[in-house]
Length: 277
Ligand SMILES: [Zn+2]
Ligand SMILES: [Zn+2]
Image (tube, rainbow, N blue to C red):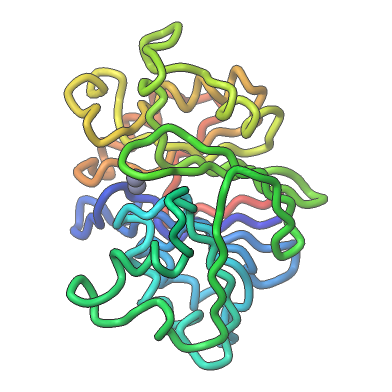
């Protein structure tokens, strides 16, 4: 399995010279079976535009799974050249809001006039829209466990993606303090998070905040990097990848955060990160 980070920023893109090394694109991760082009995209933040560079001119043929529908996880969808072309084939999994709406209706609340000129069913290629709920799926040759994760504003899911080579867990937006302060004040190490993470090779996790920022910035519903590292330790995860960096966090500030965890099997996500399992 090959995991390619296409966008690692949280909340809103971060252009500018202070953000070049970690990158300013919002959440998107591409997953490929060994020796193949990516067939699975997790989230459709602005980083999804970089998918084309992985496709050698070929169209994207695979599935896109959205963890939730906040702007930073869907805004790239209409701008992905590899999927918006006549010979693409895309199954888009849209988080079910459990209100009886079909997936295209849910997506269209944000992606239709007057918010946006193009509707999802106007994208070029062979698109289908599926509902995503807590379950176990077989998608593009991957086994995927989907669990609901506390965040804020609409239902949010986390994914555990496995093939024969290993397991990657993706939890980009997570507010564990929604349940309780937990044993260390960082939030609860709750059952959904633990069952997603247990014994995985890699955990890609919300690191929007630092411990000391939690109280003042709780209203956006995110986790502290210290929680991500401790969750990985408790769940016996080999490597944790802090992700969804705060929009104002500069390269130098992220370097300083990364140094704090030297030797703890921590790899801060950048737009250049590629992990082979
Ligand atoms: Zn987000
Ligand atoms: Zn969010």
